[in-house]
Image (tube, rainbow over all chains, first blue to last red; front, side, top):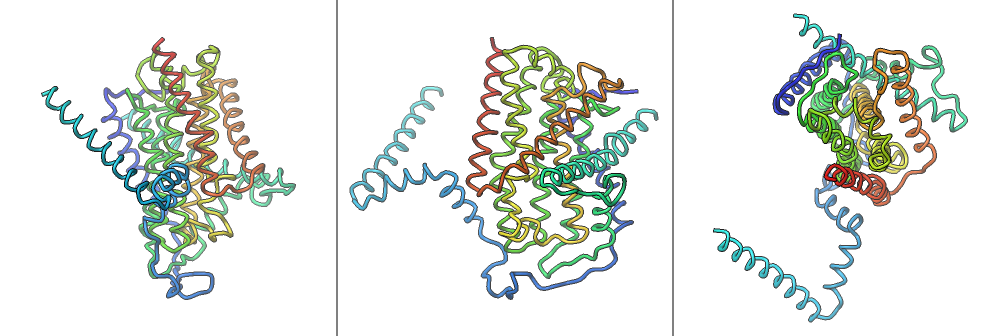
Length: 119
Length: 329
């Protein structure tokens, strides 16, 4: 009874899986269409009893996600970078930036040399 | 004609739409019942024998009987579209496992499976939430997005480990079918059992995170941020989101049972021992997830991310590296 549907490459597999997905979606959509509820109620945005004017925007900025990731999840790296730069001594900041830009220049020079040699 | 009938039966009945939804609802019942018992409660008892039909009753109530409550920023049609898309992706993924009468097989079909399960299902859930926006929803979505960055790579690497081992000896390469029917052989070799143990631990932690069971339920964080990413869901949208979540849990558990635990093998599917072994393995995976859910409280976001990183991502990567070294040797 069992049958293998064998394909030569994953592209064909992806196409067949997408067709399966579309057919399953169509069937699920039809089922939902027949059993869907008939009533709908429109309400205010719920903000713990407050009006929506108390928030400046309906959704937080994507920067929130970035800063959470950097300041919480990558806290050690963040602390190290901040600690290296923000010591209160201007020369620490200068040496940090110079070393960082120096590293970037070094990589650029090496990349150019590698390109010339390989070419 | 026969092939088309077999395809339709596989997609719509078994192990496709009907079976997947039944399995997802039954898994929800098991988690609720066992959680109830672990917390000295009865769990579902009222609908069906031993309360087994309670999740179905809840689903029908939400999708059919409850009214749809929306606010002026809501896009319930879009939310339902993405919910159905995610469920369909889970159903489509089931046809890769040897459980299916019609098995989709090719080299690297694992990548297509990952495309369906690790991309479409979480993205559908996220887009459902974003279609029903609100401040609490956005916080939940951003937390869930943070989860995905660690959880999905861990899931990918955990299931990749048996693929690496099986692809060294069997064809097609990186195929779910070939790996499922041969992975049991690698459990009896101590050199290959070690990466499989690591991958199994990683996969169980990942299942916990994908299901957003305790301690990884910070994206919904009930009471703290109302219901997180599903705060604005109600009626049919809530029912579809709940079903999508259950389908995700069921497909993830099935993937662990087949790709890491070997499904019914060495017994064939159509044999009493094979069916029993398959059921016991599935129940064991869901039971472990339920026990962990009830043994832990909620972690803060960074604690949860570190835990997934430490107990899922790192072990899964080590497992994949060990498997690769074994294959090279």
